[in-house]
Length: 177
Image (tube, rainbow, N blue to C red; front, side, top):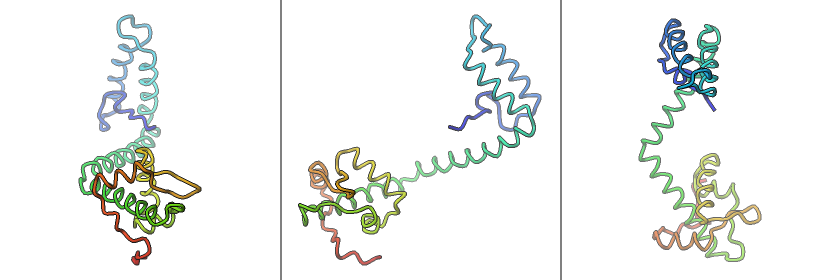
């Protein structure tokens, strides 16, 4: 897990070395384990570790590279979470998966499963994205993995029926691949 050393020292990433030292000394006195009122050994250790990295110009430059990467990932997560189209697309993919599995179960009750590769092709969803949806649908109890295949459960059928999902997607008529 990425540790935000600037947050630990309660300073800006643009803080100069004098600010790093001044803030560290203030917080170190406050959280030093010998301080009867506000001492906190764990917090003090975090402060010392952050200070040791940020006071050294080479270590700080290396840390700043990782910090900027992490900030970029946070920004991407924030943007994706704000994108209502992405969240709506997730619901569509989950509905499509349930509809595919519903139709397969209805046509072949004794052989209701669809393999990962086929499900990837039929849903037009890459495997790395499909993993999330499969996890979610399994966690809800709407699908199961049987003999290496994925199949809809009775709860999944109820879900399709209650949401009036379109269970008419034809497995054999899929021509986009």
